[in-house]
Image (cartoon, rainbow, N blue to C red; front, side, top):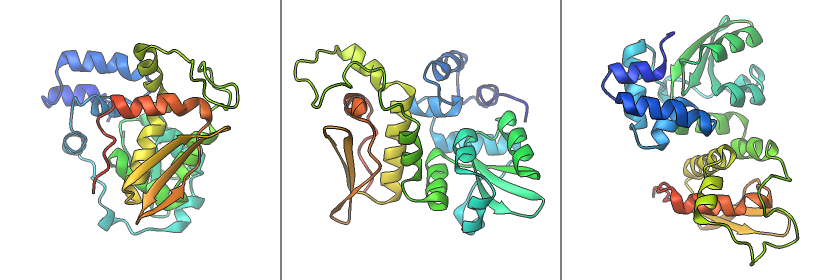
Length: 252
């Protein structure tokens, strides 16, 4: 369990040494987890990565049929703790708490959670989408979006967050805009929007700038539903992300 994810995937032949080196630098620059980065950069398929970790670490793979929904689980771990340590409780066994994690190798997170809940913690491996769905089921459909938006500074440091309207004269190079789209808060928000829309079976996502905020709506069964809006300064980076990332097509 003390091995690093990169070492395990390298030994399994899933990554090359060059890819591991690139990911070790890239995930820190974007403030992302190692596994999240290599999946996003298409270095590895997430399901394959999870299967390899299960095999190498002899850990259980999360399967919904094995864990019945229990609304009382949201009383054990605060939502802030779930998000911070990327571990969501899925089974309470008295002195043993089972949590689903995308990175069960995060021993610091496991040690901290055990201290907070005052019981032994058993991790099972899940994908990013499964984690987001579990969090939404436990704390509400749009919880992940709400938490991200709440933690985003309303007066962000991007050069277009003043005034009542987006300036038509604003000049930003493609490279600058791409860099903004790759900032960690934008990356995480876009991923969470996609995962939430998918879990709600939305056919499409509508994003439009308003005076004080960015309006985001999901179309579900032909009707548009509002979701927690991000601050207006994130509009261009979000739209840029939709152009640079090939993952914005929602599944049928």
